[in-house]
Length: 312
Image 1 (tube, helix red, strand yellow):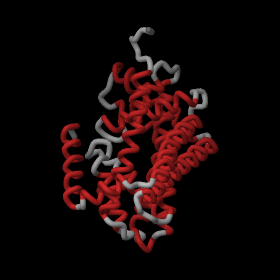
Image 2 (cartoon, one colour):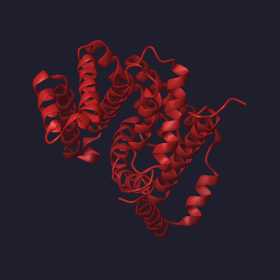
Image 3 (spheres, one colour):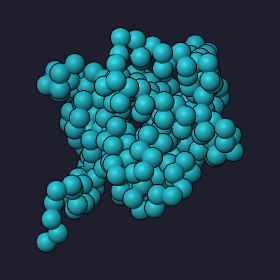
């Protein structure tokens, strides 16, 4: 889908939401948000990215934490301005692997890190849905369980010898020496690195635990922001709502999840009795924090040296 079309969809969804709520009440709620709650939410939201960088360092212990943190923040910028939420991870993998001796191992680690991060997110979401079955039912819990099983299956298939050989044979169909050089050899090294990660269950488990911690910080930050704008719900509700919202915004139909985030929060929080005005305020607040992180990423990106640049 073209970028301009995604931007149009984002703007259209926001326009519809603003048309259906009391804009004056939304504005007043934003202006009267408790400063203490906003400060705590800011700290927790930034802590998410610190934990994410630490999670990646579990898989890439040779890379300095500072570099991983800076590229994690830069990735948030590109996730916002490029089509698709995964674009930020692609940029991170490219930046970290550029000039590396084992570039495919670095790319594989970034992909593995994304999978363990999603696993941690879904585990905490499943916990929230299990506690709040009276509000969300069992269907969503079963769906999250199926997705978790699917992620585990994909991880195992990419690590087993026979499925890896099948993948490589499929990639080789109709190919020649050029495809071997630019696709098959890198894919083989990528899958070998993936299998090596899977042969370290302790490291993989630690990465998943870091994913749970990162999602815990995101949920706690959302709860703090919710309290700052007058939404008082237990942590389990926030775990379910923020987890489901995080999955929904992965759909590549808007720019940076803008519009989808706000609409999903309105729909999900409506299930626990939160008004649409308050839910939209929360969504706009989360968007504001996302923009702040993206701005930090932009400043880091501008300050970092790029290939071909000469020192001043």
